[in-house]
Length: 428
Image 1 (tube, rainbow, N blue to C red):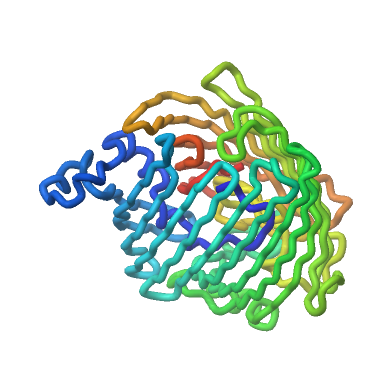
Image 2: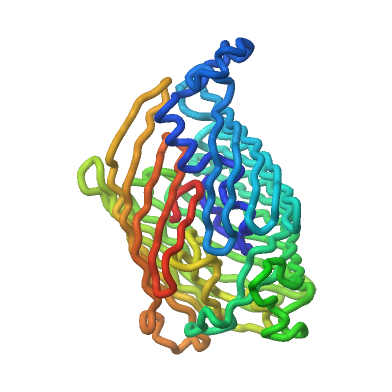
């Protein structure tokens, strides 16, 4: 599903353990789509081409989340046109920090205009998650679109290094975060290219002591009074989208430009008692022949007012994804590695198709994507947003099953070493 144009801190629990990621696509290349008619023939379970599910191994490495090893018996259901319409993926796994766990996910693509997903997970220690997403009107052919999300999660992996663009690894701390979130975003489609949207989000975040042995707990370095506790906010945001991309999920040409402004209230509804914000984000896709696309992404976010914000509400860079009004990619560092009031970032990657297969009516493409990310955070609005940048270079590997599925592995290298990310959808 496309990145939701709103922000909350994405839980590390969504490490793509609940879907097949690149392993799913690679399994498609090897075995094709299972033949359901053979499901009752036990001998057919030994043949991947006729088994009732794909026994996909789960191997996940994340700079913050430790190592995860498990198994995802994934069922793929095709639509009338042969494309993948539904992914059902239970999982059992073991994480180096939180022990054994189980999860289950459903990703459903009833049409190009509507998509929904449900993810759930429970670990032996600390982590829990339930997440429901629903989007309709994606093609903007009707006057209105809608995007909604309900989520609860408890995440033991987040890091905090202090505030500023020059924090060091020696400042690393860990904390446990519990969040409840409800979000609704109706959009008025002025045309297929132009949309005016309003987002309402209520969020409660509880910050607790860290859960990972060997990493200093946040209150020991920054003090319990300034780091631990519960905060709630109501965010009102208005967004204007201009979008000429040829696809929401697999764009090869066109641009998307977003401008937004909003205010977040500690109490009440329409007031900036938490903060006020303004920002812009842009994506551009430039094709070079039939096999190569240059993908560009840039972002600039300012907090115009900020009133004793908790650290988790600040702008940040770090991680593998671009979230509108939230964390921005810097794929040699963990999620939210640098945080302050304002942020700027720029990314470029060259997506090159290196192979293509057509198995069981499902076309599968393989891509390599060398990339570069750069960005910074800053405290004053007058600061030059393109000075003192943090730089990352790396290589991405992608498996694509049109029209909806992208699985990726990105390996980036920055000033603090290498980082590996896996997931679904393009980073931007």
